[in-house]
Image 1 (spheres, each protein chain N blue to C red):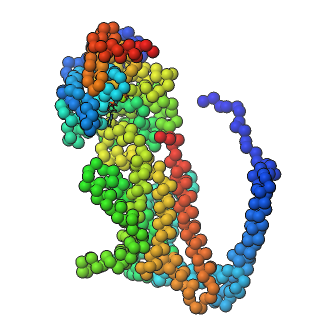
Image 2 (image 1 turned 120 degrees about the vertical axis):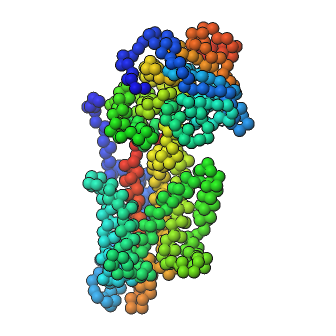
Image 3 (image 1 turned 180 degrees about the horizontal axis):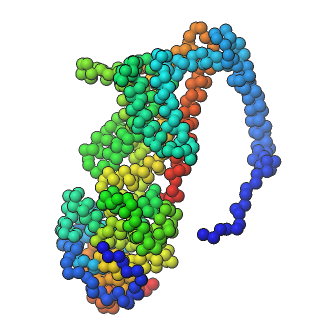
Length: 361
Length: 268
Ligand SMILES: Nc1ncnc2c1ncn2[C@@H]1O[C@H](COP(=O)(O)OP(=O)(O)OP(=O)(O)O)[C@@H](O)[C@H]1O
Ligand SMILES: [Mg+2]
């Protein structure tokens, strides 16, 4: 192609003009601008003081907090509990390895040219849960067993969310395909499954999983509370996921199915190679949305007595030794959730951009 | 499809002599075929025999069932009565038989139906690799060969969304040919294209017709029918109304419905 000698004109932004056009275009806009400006100026200062300037970071016990600003010392002192729960300190390296592997698998996904990042991502989705399955509970290969009732904090939150997320995607996909199946029995089963699970609040699912399920299970087949909660979360999330994915499947034009069939591709190859890649790409925003809401919904395990990050913080802020640290605790929890959810969101935007092949059907 | 297509584009005159290289044996037999959509009787008692290497053009007014008919031949649509036998395999509910027929029958659609998430080359290699189990290297080499024949080897690594309509349709033809089918079905391959792109697609189809491929083509391109077809079939109201070699069909149509149709389309 011949190279064009003309350059596209650059858009210049003149701040004064921009302000006049956007902020002071009329007298009521001017008043609003001034009002908002005043609110920002008066609130940022105190906030900054509280968070940073007057805050206490150093020290060894509650009396080191002056009370003028935030008492981050509290978070500092209890960080171990917030991250690992009651996981014994001498075995925490096992959890650290998992944190490290998690970061190693997914952090490179943000760096375009990172060598082998595809494989790392694949490991994160398949190998990582397997490693974790052996490493965290222990009991095999000479690793000391750590009961799941001892797990807690951020680690537990991540386990719940991670397993819920990676298990619900394939299960949800199968449910969505089943719901569109031509076989009435399969379709019927999938519809019933989806409609039942989706119509129930997660909190009841968790409650039933921990209280009612043991009543129905045969004697001796009583597995741990955490496993039951995980199954509940996964199935509940799968029902949601199925509907999101079904939306994507419906958006794929019939011609794609026909072209795939005409080329001799059977059902699974047609779905796996042609339909699902397009349908999933289409619903990435919806999938990520359900991921993020699941991530935050894991906090509900509190009601069945599991101590996720919110649970650990909540139980500590009521500790009489520390006074008035509730705000710091909840801000910390909010911050942790924000970091992960924002990460997921950014990653999905990355993915959407990368998968965009310039086609609109 | 072993021998490569002759490279020089044959002029329509030299290759229009119908039924010279048409084989003796039948490759498609349709016998007393009926199809209903619910209560609507779309196809009524269709009978058609196609021999190896024959080129057939199907035309008729909109809604006459042309698409439905050729889609029955690779079972994109199911017929309810009668028989369809393609390459000695009868189309029944048996999935294996359907799959074996689809491997031998290529199809080109009005709206191309390329896979937008795959590159042109991947579109072409997909089915040879996954259905025919051809090694990737070999499949890619074959795909490049066919892309050269439809004259767009330089677009191999682009995505369909980056191509023009005419280019996309040529890719679709190459994709179907990569499976080395014995029969090619075309369902109005040029009617979604701008006039200046119609010719590039028709040229490819004319070349293909010259190579001895069995072709069933639904089209309103009467010039194409005249130069390439061995037989023209006129459908109306779900029936085959008239069937004749192109010369007779255009100069001396027998049925009043055919005459009326030809008058309408030849006015333009
Ligand atoms: N899935 C369907 N369900 C019900 N009726 C259908 C369906 N598909 C097609 N039809 C009807 O069957 C008839 C034949 O359709 P078909 O698409 O085969 O016509 P056609 O000859 O290809 O027309 P065109 O030239 O417009 O493509 C039409 O009346 C159409 O409305
Ligand atoms: Mg049609």
